[in-house]
Amino acid sequence: MAERHPSQGAHVRHPDRWGLCGPFMTQLPVSGALLSVVDRHGHRATVRTTDPVAARWDELELELGAGPLHDAMVDSRPQLVPDVAHSAMTPLLASPLARLGVRALFAFPLIMGSATVGVAGLYRNRPGALSAESLSRAIALARSATVPAVQEALRLAESEVDTDERETRPGLRREVHQATGMISAQLDVSTTEAFARLRAYAITTNRSISAVSLDVVARTIDFLDLD
Image (cartoon, rainbow, N blue to C red; front, side):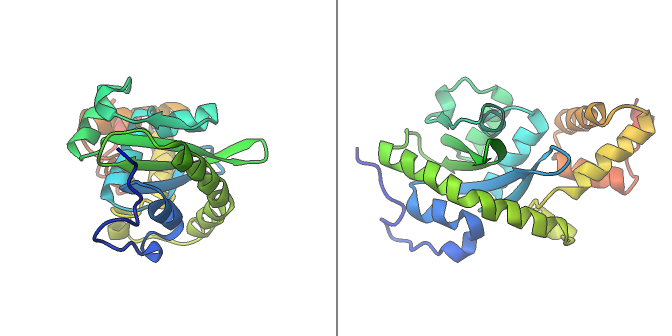
């Protein structure tokens, strides 16, 4: 079956709705997209997501420390998962994504010079590999999005985001970084170990890492009491 272009069908797509993700949505056969970059602390931080499903995919990988987005960053190579149901991904990631209707995932590193500075993530609600043409276009779009994504990350870092907006637009996840620092001070451990404990608590309580972080920052959760 020929790969269906997103411009085909009953609904017209408006690129302004998705910001920097617009070109991916209008030029590729995908259902959703996200862009994230590495901030000055070395954390992968979200710049833009097209919808709650893309945002949840990004957050699941942040919580697990594994998945196509993570691998694309580490290996500096595209990660292609044409069928989530028959992939080698951990069930901790594949199962919740499948429940959200995600059937295929594609992640492309954002490379600036010799450094990987971020990742573009694409998902769709039906299985199947990207055609050679779509794969080449996705790589080119990721290349074009690199500098704008970094610029947007810098802009977001300088502005505050309301709590309600964080639920649909993760931004730079200041609350995660702040909570990590607070846990580090509470337990007298490195920030690496503090983040690992934050992530583990989010997984075991079946909550998002952002929600737990907000509670830590608000001092309704003290990891010293949990230790």
